[in-house]
Amino acid sequence: MTRSDPSRRRFLAGVCAAGAATLTGCSGLPFGEESPSDEAPVSLSRDDIAAIERPPSPFPATVPGSIADAHESRARELLDAVPADPSVPNAAVVAKLERDRERALGRLDRDPTGSSPIDALGAWRRRREDAAAVRGAYRAATGGDDGASVARRRQAVREERAALAADLTYRAGSPATAVLAYEPIESLLAECERHVRPRETYPSDPVAEPFRAGEAVGAVERARAAIGDALAIREAHLGGRDDATSRWTSLVAAADGLEASVNRTRGSVLRGDRGPADASDEDLSGTVAQELIAMTDMRVESAVEDTVESTDRGTYATAVIEAGTALAAIEASRAVNSGIRDGGYREAPSASSIRSTSERVREAVREATGGGDPLAIRFVRPAVETVALAADRIEEGYGSPGRAQAELTYADLYVRAVPAATEFVRERLD
Image 1: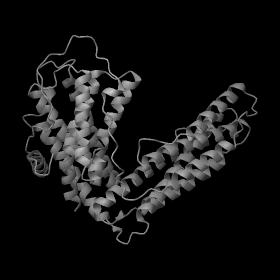
Image 2 (image 1 turned 30 degrees about the horizontal axis):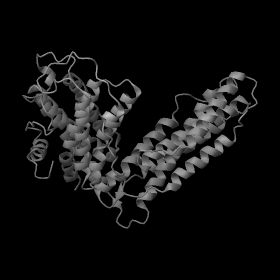
Image 3 (image 1 turned 135 degrees about the vertical axis):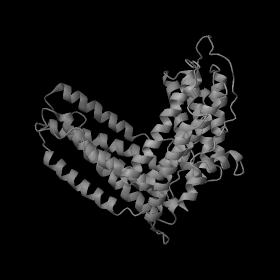
Image 4 (image 1 turned 60 degrees about the horizontal axis):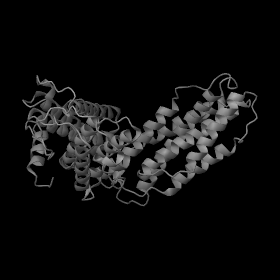
């Protein structure tokens, strides 16, 4: 869609006026009226889904390679402390230690691919956690008791996390830049919090439960890695910037206002005369339409819930991103409902229809991100991930044609709503 597209203007007007306008969507998808086919099941391959080149990272700074290098060095240091043939009386423990060590070493030799530098750091943190778990299990199996050390490190990480969270005033050159810079930092703070409160505590008898001890050591290591990354990417964002001032007030106001807009717009879809398509008496069993209804309902409810929860937690950069995602998801739902009520999405999926729909998604992503708008780039991410997941399912042999068609159709409709959602969010930030 272009900036002059009337569907975008209706979308913006609908959100501003509590979603009064009902859109017919802009998917460009053919609406067939055929019944589900009784032909043999469709055979699919990963090649039937057009690969989408991931847009560049929307993070407003370069992520230094030294951050990943530090993770790799730490992981190798931990694994170097575990011998290839550990001397432990229990043969089963020895076998698992050897397997875990070799697996962890093998991961270190593979570079994360197909992701942004910040996403790649997530892979390195998991590898570092795995290495620490092996080291902790070996220490426990050979009589080392790291319980007191784990407790001290956990407390130190908690204090460091609390200090960073208290200092999160969203310093940036603009509110939009603050959202893009601090959303990953808020995500890292949440990751740190999850792992600093491990599911498994360090055992009182580590020799008897070496791998439980390893899990506790690994969790604290992961928490330390997360808070380290949060500090490092904040420094990457702020380093050398003279225009970085606090955007706290702007983000709080934007998050609160966007949450209200999301709730009103969602309500307008539920109340509208072209509301949820499953209100129809028609039996949609076995159709792509049935898959689409379930999928869009789930995506919308999840996005709305994430928006509310992020605002309630005070993670305002995340709340703004979740709100933009929710608005695009609601518009995709509106288009799905309209299309189904008009008799669409009944046709049986085929390799050809899946290929053509995935091509439309690729083109829609290219169109939505072609201007280089970092907010739009961030908002298309769920659709890019949906396409990648659909391809993975097919490659692994458990992706049905109907589900793949529904996922790709939803991704197409979602991406086509992104430019309007981006414009609306930006106006609330300015």
